[in-house]
Length: 216
Ligand SMILES: C[S@@+](CC[C@H](N)C(=O)[O-])C[C@H]1O[C@@H](n2cnc3c(N)ncnc32)[C@H](O)[C@@H]1O
Picture 1: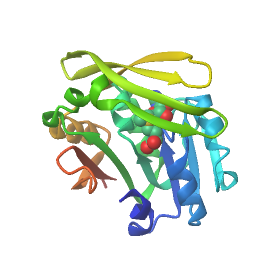
Picture 2 (picture 1 turned 120 degrees about the vertical axis):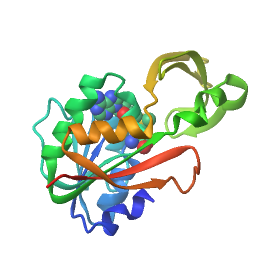
Picture 3 (picture 1 turned 30 degrees about the vertical axis):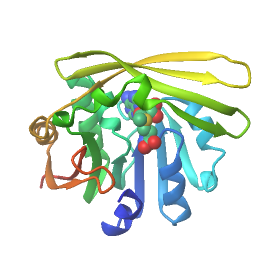
Picture 4 (picture 1 turned 180 degrees about the vertical axis):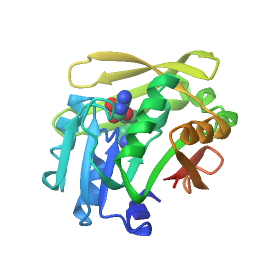
């Protein structure tokens, strides 16, 4: 769905917040859109810069609260980035900056996991273990394990085991599961409103996709 979204809304310029390793930003850039990929994680941007189409993307390390806001037709947050903003103040400031970044008629498109689906019940080692092969790194196995669920916050450990030297790396993350109503209210507080709510076509019942526009 995201691959066609820029076309659907006639956007020419796109800001992808939390672009990670840049797959979506590079895809859009190769389709001819002018793209900015923004992410605080330097390591992810290093990987992003190696992907086909990467030279056409403007990569910025940081977050939208601290970097000067560019003006764009479309702001995206793919891969449930909205859930990394666990704190309401930070989420509110982020939305304010997105509102400022949108050109007249621009859209903000993002998705968030539906709390009632309780995705965290599937975040167990036995059901989440995946083996992948990365160029230059080789085979690795990773899994996630929930450590705490409380008040809309879900904490989990992600463990990576590298086959080439047996190294084990574990990182801990926390995500916020906001309801549809909470997300709509937070957009409203930032002078945006939900023009459409869609299902993620490949994950029906699991994620809600918000299409927001600036209030007049
Ligand atoms: C689940 S990944 C999604 C990456 C990518 N959008 C995708 O769909 O594959 C979440 C991303 O959010 C980024 N992130 C974390 N805190 C952020 C912040 N304050 N502002 C922007 N991005 C942030 C992380 O570095 C990570 O790349």
